[in-house]
Structure formats: C-alpha cells, structure tokens
Image (cartoon, rainbow, N blue to C red; front, side, top):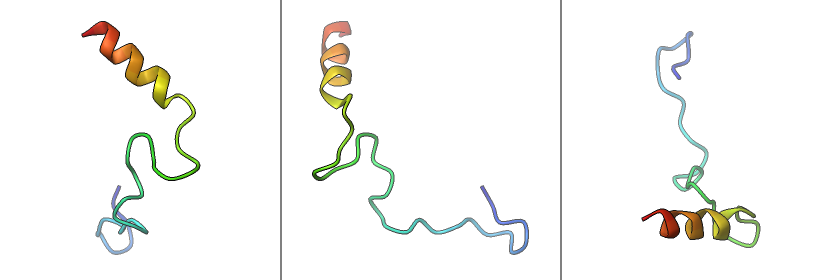
Length: 42
C-alpha cells in the first residue's frame, strides 16, 4: 500500500519482517504441518 500523503510505499521495519513462517524461537506453530501437507500433496 502507498501512503496517500507522500505517494511512497512504506519501508518495512526489517528486511526479513515478512517471511512466510517467520524465524527464530517464536516461529509459526503450523510450519511443520504445512510443510508435511505440501510434501504429501506433491
């Protein structure tokens, strides 16, 4: 989304702020299930 005042896209606070499952000690609780489901479907 663009900022209506400036017309510029907002900068993300960190370059890794939107990975699908996040990272670190508080990652997505459904990550293992989602990856297993993807492997099963393929």
